[in-house]
Length: 455
Image 1 (cartoon, one colour):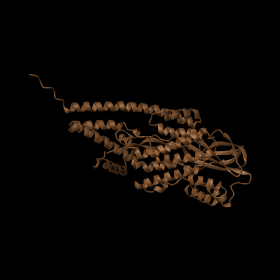
Image 2 (cartoon, one colour; image 1 turned 90 degrees about the vertical axis):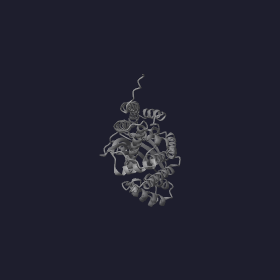
Image 3 (cartoon, one colour; image 1 turned 45 degrees about the vertical axis):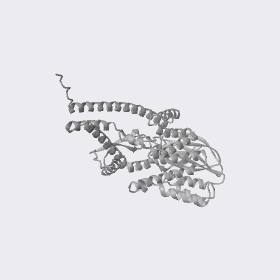
Image 4 (cartoon, one colour; image 1 turned 30 degrees about the vertical axis):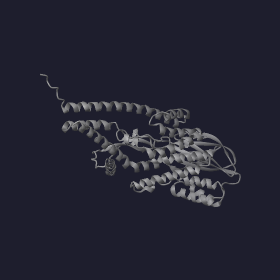
């Protein structure tokens, strides 16, 4: 008589199934961690080169990342645009920024597959989509590039930035966010740019005054606005035989994202419950999570507070902050945090439901099933990391200096000023031609101690 085959107990099957899943997850985690660590080193090298003024190394590194198939390729193209601005290649920078703007606008309409996949992994599997403040700054940097290159589109780009900021405010209100206006208030760059260009016509002074009044309202700390208003009231752009130099400075290290554990607030859990219920058409049981990993904005330290500017060693003044990019990024990131946390919670629900269905499908119940669920969900969730991809070479602030100079060629000097008013870096110089009764525009970049003149 042939003995019947041994019956495989649920316990043995559970442990075998769990072991296979755990092994697969460990391999996935090791591969992902290795790739992320390697890319992080390359990104750190590229950033450091940029901060130190080594533009050739910075461009080589960012170019290779941008041309790769890495998930970091798209933000690398934005960083590459900043390097091109610093190198004076404004045409390439504008091309990259315009392409990024168009790609992001289109991606926002069609990105579905990546969102679904991220529910089973984490947000790093999604196609890179910039934060709202990054979208606004793409258009703002296009405006500065256009002004410096003289292609005539500076005001249009600045208005695009303003429109995008207004759109973000509208979306935030629709999502129930309170006190939207301070968080998504218009930038002072657009009215300032318009005021400068209207004043340059020598006859649209009333329009220029209204623009500068708006600047003063949006950025009360920008003291030059009151001087601009008084000057336009007199109808004189500059003394006879003089022209005007406008220096737009990208000062300090701008916002970056870092992964931090964030408590799961009541508001976030409510949002997650609503989102998941809509997706599954049923009321989901949310997990009891104390905290989740989320991307939070951090402003890296920098010795650059402003730029001291002179003409042939005769001091002209220091740049004044017009747009606080870092503050805008922090405020918008904080406003979006309940939805960011909710997404992480919903992702955990998706994973638990998926594992529960798999365990039920093989007929495992009781304690063995609970152990399988716990081990698998825990290992699966441990692979999650916050998506910290970002446009990391943005400036902390956009600052401005206006100076009236005799028409002709001038040797302009630029030196980084620290928070205490002391000079903290070497002087950079650039010759500039000041046209009579007209404007000359310069863009400079100073993320750290070195000033880079975009010429």
